[in-house]
Image 1 (cartoon, rainbow, N blue to C red):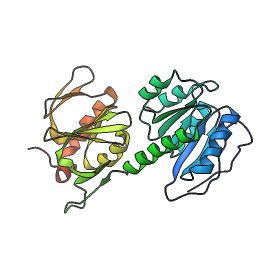
Image 2: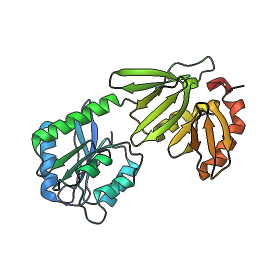
Image 3: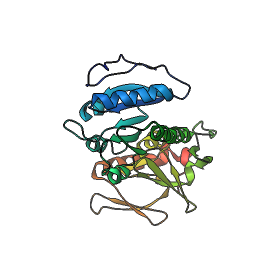
Image 4: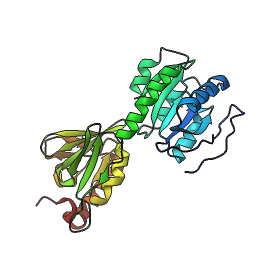
Length: 278
């Protein structure tokens, strides 16, 4: 894992060297005040070696650039920052893959923090026991969020199912049984052919990368569909598809042409992978 040098002597963005541990939670701090940042770093160093501090930033704009280019598991985020706020930073990542712990001197933002799907909300000065509890929740979350992976393969060599991890273990879900997926912040809901659903702790974008090779189609910022189960299409607005369960899903204008292009290729390129309805 690459670690860049630290610039912790200044209140601006810096990168902090720390040895990796078996469970290495890649972490950044977004805090413009030097004293609170140093206190939080000290508490982490003293008791939480699993947190690998990759960077410290005093502005949301600086953190946004880093988050766009680097893999991060956890962000300690102040709310009041120069220029953009901590909430502005999160607005730039509607499908974020990192967890957030707010660290602030104000208690009246708690409800808004919950709406942002923050894992915790710590008041300054940070209490070591509250920090320990918050990091415990982070560890549990990361352990249960093992990457969903394609599982057993068909004779064609292509995987025919997906492994969905959750707190109690994992489920194998066959591609042929998936009607569509719906993104819900940092979660994705799978709607299945038997009328049930499963909730996975990964973003829709991550599943898009896994499922596109086997013929699934992203039709909207909120939905991915299995074309096997498309029942009909309507041209109203930018387009809508009816799924076999009777649900109508919007097709974004940008993705409507992509949908038709992929459907034209679907019966040829993916028949053997997920089974086209005849």
